[in-house]
Image (cartoon, rainbow, N blue to C red; front, side, top):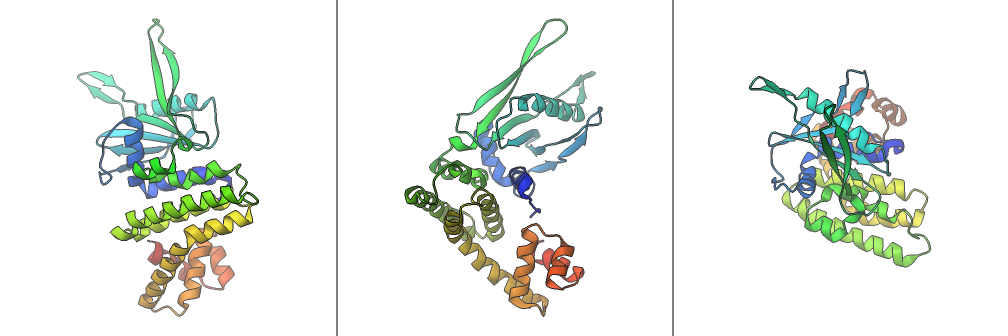
Length: 303
């Protein structure tokens, strides 16, 4: 999994999911664009950085599915100029994929959408009216989807697991320290979420996918609940216990297989520090190991 910092945690979790778990984006794409792609459809990752003729670097998330390009962007807050950036991104993507058909160049714009992590509006279309020199006009439209619009039941029913790391954001302003009712409500929701993910992933042999998704859910929650100790502890008890159990068992087996001298505790420490954002070098120095040992453990357990 990619190293994630709090400064860009929402963007980083979003990109990590698109790049490392793109199959989770398929139900979301179906929801936004009315498609019916199966979750195991072939997905081709397109490069997420490119340079415009003006020299600007643009980052975006592009997936090629059934010969169509889907461009997804994530916004944690409202931004009235986002639609302006989207049309710039989409024209850049269109120019890169432009084809000559029957003697005439044809540019295909991607199927694009903005995912707003805050807010609970229904999906709306953001629009720019493009006016040609001759006076002809056409409307560039991009759907804006609000994660907060979807209830837990809708997310689970529609398999919109991609939204789960951001689900905790609807509790940002809730009284989770003295208001036991809101805290209990939140924990009950996450118990149901964890049970569903266990059924969908663990019981179907997808342990890594389960661990990775839970990890991202916990990372966002740790950030949102960073100043609320009671809520953070309760959340960790609900969502983290199964992951630690699975991870310990897996790392012990991996350590025995490799014949390592470090044993259970040290291997788990290495993985934990790296997942918290430490570099290979920092982790090696902290645990007084060689960088080669740390790198080997990381590659063989996470690769």
